[in-house]
Amino acid sequence: MNTLELWERYKKYLCCHPEIGLMLDISRMAFNDDFFSEMEPLMRKAYCNMSDLEGGGVANPDEQRMVGHYWLRNPGLAPTPAIREAIETTSKNIQAFADRVHAGIITPQQGSRFTRFLVIGIGGSALGPQFVADALGSAAEPMKPYFLDNTDPDGIDRILAEIGTALSETLTIVISKSGGTAETRNCMLEVKEVYRRIGLDFPKHAVAVTGAGSELDDVALREGWLSRFPMWDWVGGRTSVTSAVGLLPAALQGFDIHALLEGARLCDEITRNRETRANPAGLLALMWYHATGGRGAKDMVILPYKDRLLLFSRYLQQLVMESLGKESDLNGAVVHQGISVYGNKGSTDQHAYVQQLRDGLNNFFVTFVEVLRDRKGKSVPVLENSTSGDFLSGFLHGTRRALYENGRESVTITVDTVDERSIGILISLYERAVGFYASLINVNAYHQPGVEAGKKAAGAVLLLQNKIFDYLASCNGKALTAEEIAIVIDAGTEAETIFKILLRAAANDDHGIAMQKSEVIFESRFYKP
Image (cartoon, rainbow, N blue to C red; front, side):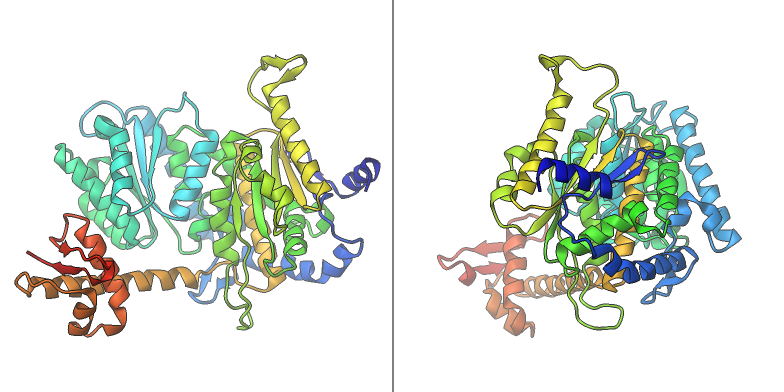
């Protein structure tokens, strides 16, 4: 198409909602003229499924759970008065708690005020809060955030070293629905020990966000932590950012959580429109379907042209891939569905992988995220009549054009600015697009059996490790190969795993395992002196 034809296509397909400062441009997707009419029956089904979800239908049959993250920003939709009251009360309690911390009413054991907070969580209990913290953070925030989101000892040490002596002024938020998530529990125990070493009581600096009656809830209640906030079984981790999981850290960082919720609520309302051409989440889901053939045939590349949205692609990786990556559909047929997500930021991407996007394998579609407002106040010109923001915009539109000219498809999301309201809008937009797309491909977006399988496998490795260490402790210093150990402990098929366990154990001081290294590495011998 020539530029005039593209302009006409842009006008024809632009989805514009100035009332919330959101536009979606799908004109650079190469769908045919009949695409919308062909997909309309599936979209009708998707709208009905979403309505059932919001009405309190059981959307996760594996666990007989409702899925109610949309109620979090509009409690009036909740299916029972008790749920509505719980949402409203929690939101008020979060703001009240943050206000009391900021005012110096809730204080650390030593010192007059909390100046930092440390979030301990993993997956949705960290990715959402991290995204919001990075997108909205400023030098003026009342508390500086830190995050521990993995069971990596070096990573734990690195964050605690950054906090340093300010740990005495740090509020620690432990987030785990069950209280038994290994990564979160491990980080909590390590942090608890560091508080102890400097003479501080961990409970006087700790807050729990967890399920009522969970292991973590019991510990927090028994030890007298500063506060406890609920995680409900009808909110999944990857859609929990508008619950206490995301709202508590955001409020402590000084953000307007009511504006965040309002943005999400307004976008929810707009995306309930069953006229698909006016529904940005419905359109987004349809573009995913078109680009991937409804089979995940192409990757989703997220390119926000705004530094504050750098973590958006990481947040979306979990939301999209954990929701849509499924072996079976709702009928039990094996389908191996999903869409792979990766991203960078513009114009860094220009100097990273846009070369491959334009000239390499055409196995992707791009989502550009454009932010109209550059900064507060005027910018300094860097060339005549050009600011740094003008260059950023030029790179976005230049890259979009260069990709289109080489047959690469893209959509462009435009928001007015990055603030609490617009972040809520983006969160809602993608949560609902994921829900619609799941309906289109007939999978359950609200369970994650693969994650649970990985946890069970990890537990089996740790049990095997204990068996290995117990055996070596009984050998009086005798050195054995992994294969020899495997035979003796009746784990002959696990020689490789045993070797890897021992190799790592010998590299650390924790378990007292030594190694006699062989030229052929897997013939090395291990022993406990």
